[in-house]
Length: 330
Picture 1: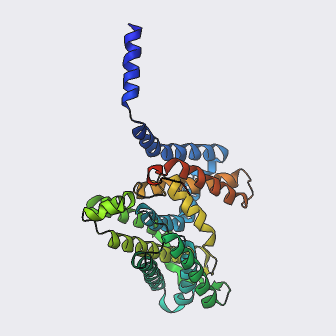
Picture 2 (picture 1 turned 120 degrees about the vertical axis):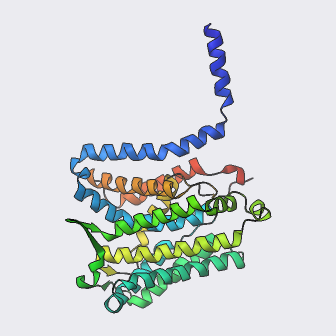
Picture 3 (picture 1 turned 180 degrees about the vertical axis):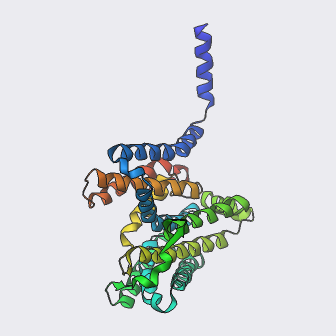
């Protein structure tokens, strides 16, 4: 009897494809990691779960979530945007310069600037057929340089009265507007993915672009849209950083590039494209945010964070990368 049972178990195990097992692992592991991290930090510091602490963490995570949401779209269609942090820094300078005259509308102006910058990068990538890595690496230098020129290589301060929109009152609670805006961006992208065929188009382009084109998917338009939205999100993130720091600077968001990439790939989005989504990116951002809090509670030197993010990126990419797309890994 035991032999028959063992035979059946072996048959079932052999019937489960390795790919399906890997997909299940990628689907549930980020959520499990997040729960474990939250429990660990809560045990080390019970104050972490108090409303004020959670609001502070949400405010800190908001620019990261907005940047990651836009960059995720580019990665999902098989490209990459290395310029998001530099573009956010440049837009923070513009917001700080424009707030006295435009008030809250300065953020919308920065979003338009970011979207235009993203569209330019996307057009260069699609029309000139230059790898997105090279285009956005060059863009990183261009946007950093413009930020330095516009700010005269100095921090641009903002008066507190000009940033009344930075907080929203809900009853007696004073909620950081950045957290609400970031949540709105995530919900908007999720709604577009859910109610339109856009997600399938992104995944098709990221998985096999030639086949997607033959199937009628507008691959060029998808890439242009991805880079434009990524740029718009960078502009918005620059405005949120100004609301948080009451200043704009040409290097204000530069340290966020590695956490952005880490959040996207740790959440389970494949760096090679074709697999991922906004829900995974939100979980990835929460993991990075809780990890940052946990490292602070543990007394880890902030300079060590970059090392940890680098290790996370390498580890997450090794798990999510689709090696079938490469005959030789270079």
